[in-house]
Image (cartoon, rainbow, N blue to C red; front, side, top):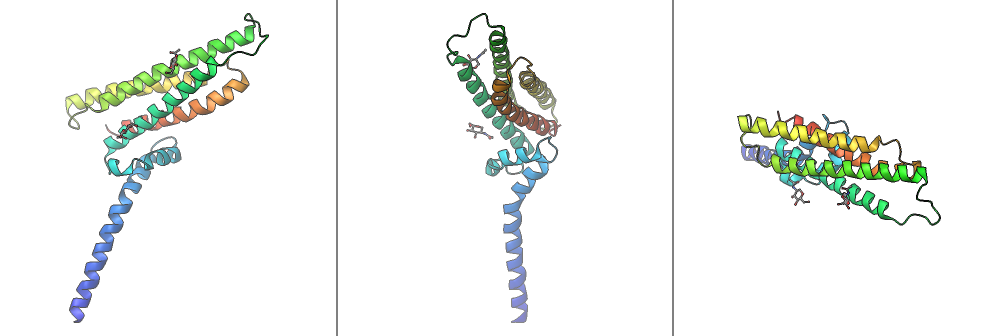
Length: 195
Ligand SMILES: *[C@@H]1O[C@H](CO)[C@@H](O)[C@H](O)[C@H]1NC(C)=O
Ligand SMILES: *[C@@H]1O[C@H](CO)[C@@H](O)[C@H](O)[C@H]1NC(C)=O
């Protein structure tokens, strides 16, 4: 009787330990991986949603991070496009130097964002062709992905640094672009961990 009680306790505690570890591991994994990025909180919050499919695969995590980055860059590009398509206030002369340099800055910013979006999409595609870890093919594709994602990040930062944006435009655009650039920076950090 005593022995079977003990074994029941052992059995039950083993059972609960398994449950506890299988339910907490994916979270811990994402949290631990995100610690190596520059924006760990943003990284964790944005990737926690992807937890079930990621299931402790660093490659899936990096892939999901790229997904988040594409989502944000796409939405900010659409936002900026819509903003710049807005009718200009009446009475504003076309030759107004402030207005035209701002239009130019917004246009440049949007071009950078669109290029960056293109590079991120190519990277997602290429991530799907990495093949076996540490193979020559893996190293080649991974290094292409690293180059593209860091170029994408440069494009986003270039947009952020655009000096000719007026304070009003720069606030709404910058906040969104900064959020997108954070996601790209996080994705790059997670990709760099795959080496
Ligand atoms: C990436 O995003 C697409 C579209 O939003 C989604 O269908 C897919 O499941 C995502 N993949 C990963 C690995 O996060
Ligand atoms: C950038 O992409 C947006 C959204 O897809 C599009 O409306 C806009 O015309 C593009 N702009 C440039 C400069 O490529």
